[in-house]
Image (cartoon, rainbow over the protein chains, first blue to last red):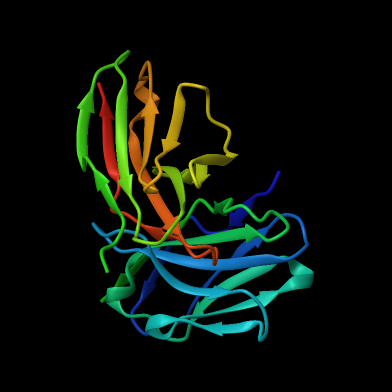
Amino acid sequence: AQSVSQHNHHVILSEAASLELGCNYSYGGTVNLFWYVQYPGQHLQLLLKYFSGDPLVKGIKGFEAEFIKSKFSFNLRKPSVQWSDTAEYFCAVNWSWNNNNDMRFGAGTRLTVKP
Amino acid sequence: KAGVTQTPRYLIKTRGQQVTLSCSPISGHRSVSWYQQTPGQGLQFLFEYFSETQRNKGNFPGRFSGRQFSNSRSEMNVSTLELGDSALYLCASTWGTGELFFGEGSRLTVL
């Protein structure tokens, strides 16, 4: 069955540190890839998405992610985190061979940024 | 443009009862998906509806069911509630790009 794995359950960083959150998914084929963020007390919001084209995608708030097809990965990065980046981050995959919206999420990574 | 609206936002039930949650998608979105979110488990896919038809279903017991109406509004129902059903239930809609737009969720507590 399709699955999405996020390697880190909880990451703690100091402000200005660099961030990389890992995400891997099962199966190949055509995929649509997403990173969502959930700030404390707020609903899930889209950070960035990849459908096709340049495998390095840029999202909001300085986040970017790189799709590496050979590794089934879509890691999220930010060069310098801020305290306001404290949130939970979810990687999600929608396999395009299935025209239905069957988007699967990873278990999430909680990011705590210390001021 | 109004976002995805879920009601009720909070509810408390006791074991054995049933619950119905409602979701109004963004206008024009015909696909509605439901997820269960619990700490450490992330978002578990429940089911997805499109034009009143269930197209996908996750690995949940038959106590979990849903439906979609002609105006794309959706409801999910959980019967014979168990303690483990306590969770945040999220509804998301899309018009077909795959990008989901989420509501704020319905937080269910089962006592």
